[in-house]
Image (cartoon, rainbow, N blue to C red; front, side, top):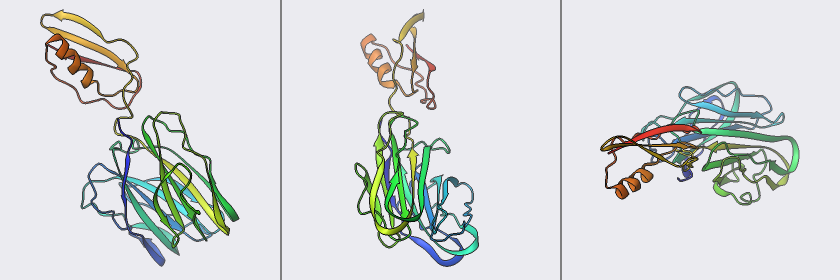
Length: 275
């Protein structure tokens, strides 16, 4: 199965001094795609950003200096989906981007796996993140960097850049992880001197969590002619339609009632009827 893919990112939207903002929408939104909204404010106080339903906050970091970020997620409902009005209590400037991904699980919180963050509230010349292990097969790890004075000097090693802007000092990149438990590379990137920064990583989970692994040989048991049953255990669970069709061709039978693949749960047992 395939890893989720970056589709596009919206234009920057922000406010110079206020208590709310509405991000711009990315172009060509598609129902079921995952949307990640990054909001950040260059302020020492915590703006207590609040997102309305159906948005779910994933990470919120205050670096105890002059920087705050929040990352929230939602499943796109269609091309005309309105972007949220994000509110906070104390007047400050704030900025936002919305990133769109495809090939993801289409419910929350399942579409987002692990997440992490790191920060430095003092003047620094290096921005870091330890990397993160994936919770499922075929995940996309999205790395966010925000600095108060400068962004990274380039895309982190082994990552693919999605957005790099010196105006907002933002770098967003991604890294594909094929196997559950493997990690995205640690990040250590040079900055201009005197930079406070925050990094965060978000795991985007694939639609079916990777290809199924058959942990026991399929067993064919004759119930009564001409009906038979194929039973298999998969970890993680996925569609085994190809196996069924191959078996049907060899046995000169047809597959009936092929089920929708079950959720991504290890060790599930499914029984398929062929005749």
